[in-house]
Length: 470
Image 1 (cartoon, rainbow, N blue to C red):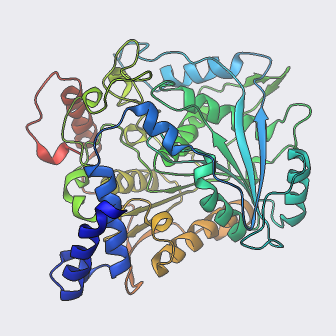
Image 2 (tube, helix red, strand yellow):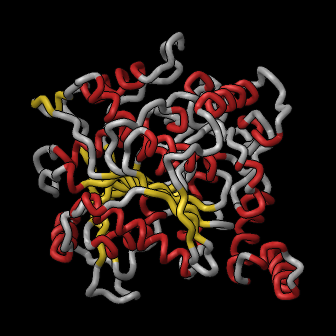
């Protein structure tokens, strides 16, 4: 932090004297936190991807009021789940699109963490030296609700881990009085699309239809909510789109010797979801002043990182997560999804951040198609603000709303009231918005911008529209 002392001092002085534009919206602690975080992310010298990945997945010591039981979900006996995913990918292609465009991932075991709230512990309590099965059993003694949150962590699909998101999953477990299963899906660039999605689908089917020697018993889909932040929000939504497409195709999956249905979960609840991998929305430029996420002005992602053992990929590609040919596919960028009809209820939260426009468009489109959607937008707040600024009243408001939706979806679905609200973080004043009105952009305009952005990212054309940059 020593190199950041001048920045901290300047921020404090400008904020106190009212010279900072953000002093109108943020308290001093918020502005200090965001400016320092922005500086670390944007001003640090480029590091190799493998190093960044290792730094982001360091496993901290388990301390405090949390239960963690580590599990490994075995691969099923058959390959049917993998083939079903490929059918969903093909079924959602635009007419005329070429097949392929991705590397078919292998089917393998999926690691995860059961997380629960350990009410009888103190902040200094350490992890008990007992088996993972015993930890799970102790956790279940404190679970008071049937709610099971299937959680997917954020990190742009190439960073982070369930361990980094334990504060979030612990808080959700506490507020819902249920439990979270946090998934260690495979990370890019080593494992590009659709490896993470395959792991997500395997984890859901394992919850529904556990193989022998699993710690948990079968979980009803009416008690499961997919949840995630940022890239994990993307994964939650594309897993839902996968299930919707498999149901449209009337497909069942042979799973450990039995033919199984693929039911919808009770709900999907996302925090700052990344729904457009191409970064084509206007807010990627217009909301930069409120966000700490980097503004990726250069078109060629491969030039941003020093070469190392995992990047550039083999064969080379421009995007860390997916090939250019599928960047606009609904299972990569759910902003491009044509239909949310028949979906379970959705909760979508965003700040006034780079990703706001895409989140709002998905919420409005789903609502117009008859889906019950709860949309919350917090003015002047950055990406995943409640996880970064935990003490803000607006952060507590968000977590309460997130947990309330999850509990309503699993226990009182009839109590969910669809609609949108925009919240002022300082006063917590809110105004309602009609989600069935247009998001301000037509579907054709949204998809057109995405396709143009892909052409820029691929190097086919120059980027002449700065608003389309992230």
